[in-house]
Length: 148
Ligand SMILES: [Zn+2]
Image 1 (cartoon, rainbow, N blue to C red):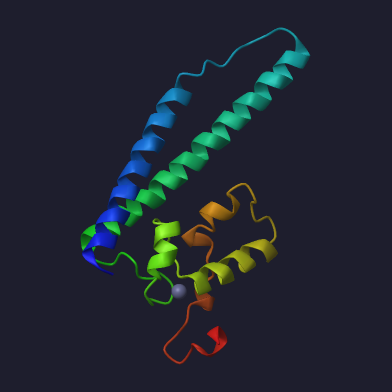
Image 2 (image 1 turned 60 degrees about the horizontal axis):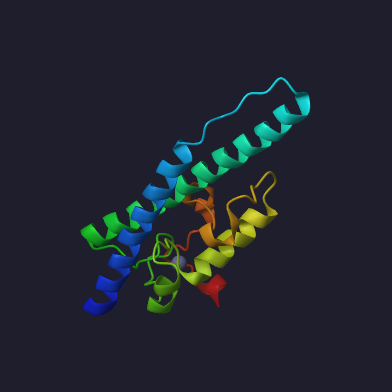
């Protein structure tokens, strides 16, 4: 990766992080309303749940973006966390906080889709959390054949 790409990706990540922080602050101001009316209670509960899930999504995204910035610091940015192959610049430009190369991400997505109880709330953009990536699928030194 050349310095121009690296600089642009870093700027993108920093902007993203700033956007997340601003958005969270706004939502933190949301006052949870109370009402004696049962129907309203349900409505408020739904809105509250939505707010919580948005905050959860933001905090996960913030962790991913911070992780990417940390990897830029220690020089491991742009390397797949699973197979240690370089992640393509094109993919990083689309998803600067990507932790996995496209091959590992696809495999991870498939594993998550087939896993019982796998949450769908995270969406395609966020992909699968690293903890959910099955360690046994990690490509070993004699592996690689399954990627062909
Ligand atoms: Zn990979």
